[in-house]
Image (cartoon, rainbow, N blue to C red; front, side, top):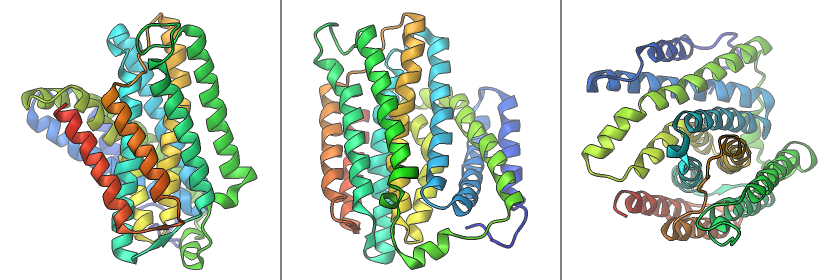
Length: 360
């Protein structure tokens, strides 16, 4: 947690992003040692991003703090996906789909599961405002079905594909739904995404010096760029490691998505430990919605410009896991209270997703 009296960030939160940016000059690692060193730099950058995100969250208050972090990570992640699509062409036709399902599984099962387990273990029960969570889940279910399941059942195009007009329609709908979510979260129904807990409010609303906020905002952007680019640089080493153990290449997307979403994951875990599970849920749901709402329009534009057939429809195996995730999340987050039981259930689903990905 940032010290409200300090007027400059700790030195390590400045050095770590600087070293991470310097590590980008190395290029793709040529040995296991270099890959390990880049991994250490990546870990330092992730921890630094969490600190600076917390500074902004304390200054802006909820839910603006979580929205800033979710948007920043998602915009950079989407830019990375589009750049890979432009570089690999037809070889990247499943990239968006694999990234979206991995992001949903990580945010809704892994991040939520860990937060509920750790928060419940420390505070027994934790409360949140059910109305905001229910709205987020309803929007996420709608976008997930329209983008990842419906393509398998349309007849204008054979296979798990949309026609150009269908893809444009879904891209527009994705923007509309996410824009509505942001408006509801920040303007019309902001109170639905806040939890009335005096103890938690005392922690969140801390007077942070304006100059510290400006410095942290700038460093956060640099740090998130470094996190994503380092994850991209390490992708070749990850692919080699995955191939060496004989696992499917789909596992590469899961690992890279985990690295990119790590700042949000650590920020959500920190909030849960401080008995602010509302913040954790805002981060998880906001990240999942932003990933679909911003990624689909961006990749749709790239696919149409390149004449690329964008494969969005999930396999039956992934469809079952996605349906189970949305169903269980609707049930476990329907009472306004969380316990370690809810956390264990979500982690079991995530473990099943990982296991089936490795051994399909």
